[in-house]
Length: 426
Ligand code: LLP
Image (cartoon, helix red, strand yellow):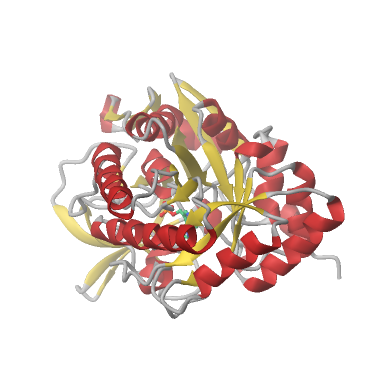
């Protein structure tokens, strides 16, 4: 969050609120969302991409309050499941501003999207083309669709979150001709309203050349479709994936820099192919919500392991942030409830779960007097932490507390043991 400072006694404050008071009121662990920060990131994207539709990727983090913030800031919303769609609709997101993704949308999910009047559905397989065509025919509707193209770009990110190389489950392959065949099928059947092509090359990407290569390749396909069928598709979605700084080593491009580069490549490619420039959209998730949140934990134990390393155990862990264990992600941690002049100590911040891979922050210097009862904040946890949280070891998932102008409000409450037991009907 942008509004973090050190206040009285050296405790962190966010939006004017002392973290010790937040911990007392809402308990720990808790995700603390700086609402102005999220809104200003949404605005930065809107300002950098003024004539582009910015679809916030709800998979990064979604709840009703965030849907409303996003809607108020003029963004669109990308959902990728019936659950995300239900959340968006229940928060009043206009259906025409929703895009629906997924490689295996069920008949029930597609039906729900059609009935709600979702603005566009991103097609991911021939099975889905058939499925949606049949549903649209039955209902006499003509939904807007995009074709997700696998452009064959090697994005420099973790293997599990790269999506544009050939050998993975998403989209229609460009090189193999499937993408062109999918476009021809949709155009020739004439039931679905093919609005354009879509590509998403992966997530947490810093090297923008991947986006440029991808834009060039989808536009070449756009030209091929025009030459073969005489239609110029009016839209183009370049996906999300813009990296954020988790530690001081990361140096992400700003929305302005991204916009400039994407615009340049689209303009020059369109000129080269003699295409009119399509209406663009993008789908940032992490870059909007990631930096706006920190997780507040309380230290439970401090253990020196044979002089090798000090393990600082907090009251959450891989159930509220699986990213370190899953992607070897790097985070930082800071003593949040007080200042300390003690020597720095190389520590590992770990959780309370029953496996040794339960690491939140691999290496961090914390003051040597860190002790049970201290508060620790881990920044940059807005994206894919609450949204991938689990109940591993029957640990209830933490709440999300939004702070703004010296006021805190609970937007997702803490899960309780009763919540967990309510599902257990045996
Ligand atoms: N559009 C599509 C089609 C996507 O699949 C994704 C992310 C996005 C947009 C948003 O990407 P972003 O701007 O947030 O990078 N769980 C992983 C990330 C998975 C991303 C999945 N798709 C993680 O924690 O890093």
